[in-house]
Image (cartoon, rainbow, N blue to C red; front, side, top):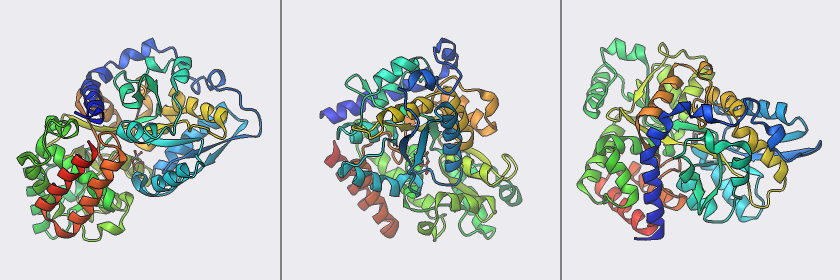
Length: 438
Ligand code: GAL
């Protein structure tokens, strides 16, 4: 077995423990941290007037920018002497931003701090390329090991070093729906794949051509991973990444066939739509469903939609009880041009004040386990409860289970599949992608 595979196995073993670890939200009582802006006044190395920090992300609109702005406001209060340079590059899931970042890193021109996903994206990409600094000193200083879920730490660590500051936990396997459309069609929220297909058949028969709203290609990959999870179950999904389930197995064939069936109910213009556009189709009643991470709720709230009235939610059909997670985290660049100011930013990003300002707007729950629940809406409270009690598995599209190289081979195969819909060809490409990356 390769070292990479062994690392994956230990990551997945850590994931398996996540649910129980997150359940103990009363860990918060052992926190040595304060409730201020992360004690940035005590944590940050002083960065005097005139200092600035360049922070790179892909949060430019649709609920995401508003979340970032809320955290920037906490930072401005904690560190008024530091100018925040927001270098966000538009494009959902970082498709554009990550290309820009890669060329900057290649040119040895790193932003001080950037957004990276916990898991293989972080460890198998930035740590592997020696592009970021360990942050153990900040964890010690801020007491973060007492307030971050114990089992998230291995997903941001390598060789005893901790490499990022997680700001949130997002859920990937969420299905958003339009309650009025469903009621008018006499359709219940489906809880299994079969019910899901039956519901979409009913909606189609009633004249809705594309009951499932989808956007550009990364949202197809996102749809694929949640349908595979539904079709195969959590253990098999995990097995794909630790090598214990073969990519050429019958379970994968069935999962890809299910994915293909579901794709048959999506809109023909998906490639031209962002994830927010796909969400808007649901709000407007032009589609009944959208499968998207819970940043979609950040967008829904930003446009004034009312939970339970304008939109409803459930786990992707067939995945109830499983929480497919991802975590946005911020890193410290090696040779950061403004290292002290970057540490001040990271201090706020890891603080309860920073996380409780950011997450209710962003549509995610804090990575820290001492959230002030009174600040969160109905959906996010349910996500907190599910995170604490469900089986937790990782997301592919958002960096947890595969590094960039593996994910990009899978993504290319999905791009071709969108053209030919040939399950056997897709499955062979996925087998080859694993072989090339493990
Ligand atoms: C994810 C990211 C989320 C959200 C989403 C859509 O990769 O983790 O925070 O930004 O993309 O852009």
